[in-house]
Image (cartoon, rainbow, N blue to C red; front, side):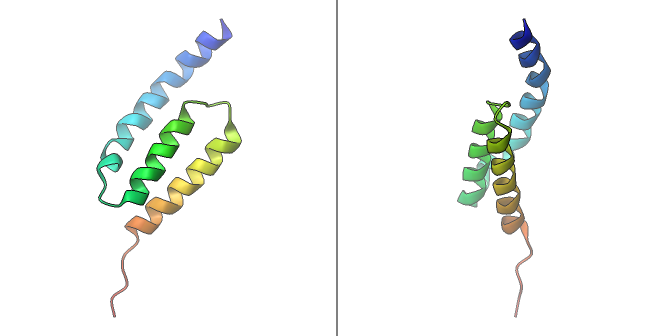
Length: 73
């Protein structure tokens, strides 16, 4: 019973995360695509919070690096 409740509680946020990730999966930067794939894979196991935090951190750093303005000389 508890596992059904857990699945029901996380289904909507996981669906929204997958929907939000769709454009990132088509990004021209392969690092962003890889970080997005890893994050989506980790989201499947919501109980492993340490792994989730690591994936979120890596994802954030990768996206920030990819979207940072390029310095011009």
